[in-house]
Length: 198
Image (spheres, helix red, strand yellow):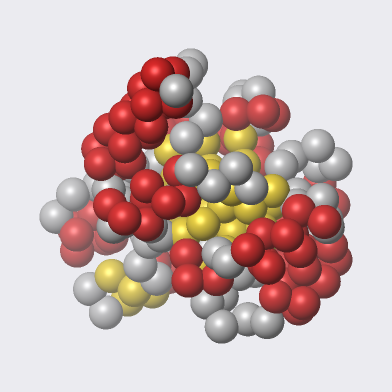
């Protein structure tokens, strides 16, 4: 699965962009051409990612703020439902997505210090199926509580070899978000190989 952050530009283009401010200007107030000039390259558009996605990969789209849920969903409708997960920190985003679509898979990203009980209530409120927990919050109690609530759990952002190895072997985790893609893939291969020989 490929994870990407999506924001809307001032001219309503949906781009892959983590940062809210580029060259001192908010992305949502900056047109794509001006943003391109400030960055020195043109950010990828969400529709380009969808059309280039190989059939063996799924997409995890984090929507960074409210206001363009319907536009994002329209671009993403070409993907089979099982190949798409939309996540956000913002309940307003997830509620709107659920209002538009009963079938899209949704994940609530939980801030690092948010109490687990509140996170579980918020996930139920916006009818999310996934809870995306900060890696420091992925403890046995949290996994047990999320599982009991019928939620699948992802951990973010896990980049160390030790943590990746541990989380890749945790059966109650549905996914691990990482920047260390090559390391994660090689560890997953290594663990699969080891389990075949046991």
